[in-house]
Length: 94
Image 1 (spheres, rainbow, N blue to C red):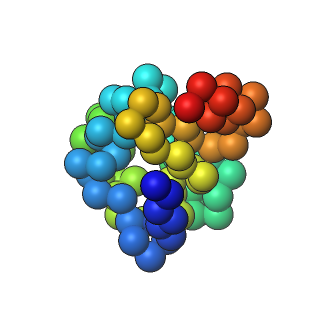
Image 2 (image 1 turned 60 degrees about the vertical axis):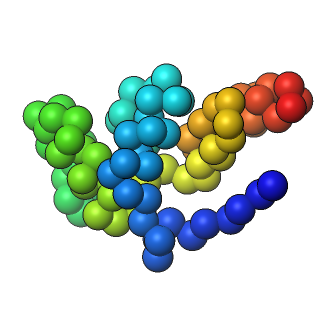
């Protein structure tokens, strides 16, 4: 089953982000949309290294535009951002 979610209007919760982060095996920074306008306006490049994980989760949950897209969540994996080889590998094993 596929469910599309527009995270700009329906932000992920802190709990969802924690679960996705844990299941992804990625560094939390990979969940940030580092090329986005809001990321740049908030000058997060310099601020993120000094923030703890709870602060980062709260920030990500505050605005869906801070979250890197697309995110593909399945029972077996979480993919953040589009990397064709990663998506192809994950989806071909299904």
